Image: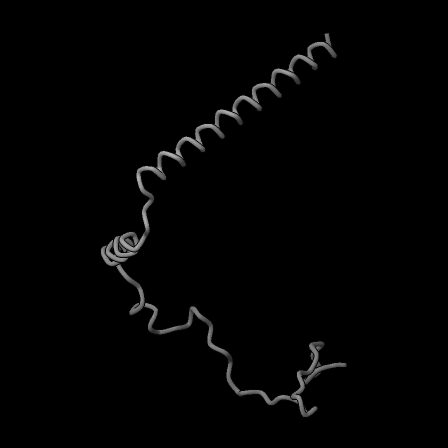
Length: 99
């Protein structure tokens, strides 16, 4: 079905079955606001708000930090060992294959 004014877009219909009416003006875009300059903040305001948000953060305790550090360290060492072993295995296999 061809929409209003011969466009290829479908016509929107109301639940009663009639066509919806046009509102007569374009919808404003977000960038068209005249008060954008009023909403902008400077670097000092940004830093103050950031500090305020950081004060709300629940920081981990020393024990939790120690636990997380050990877990991450063990995981990184494991991944280094795994990648090193795979590199050694594939390197050895390629040398045997092409030598």
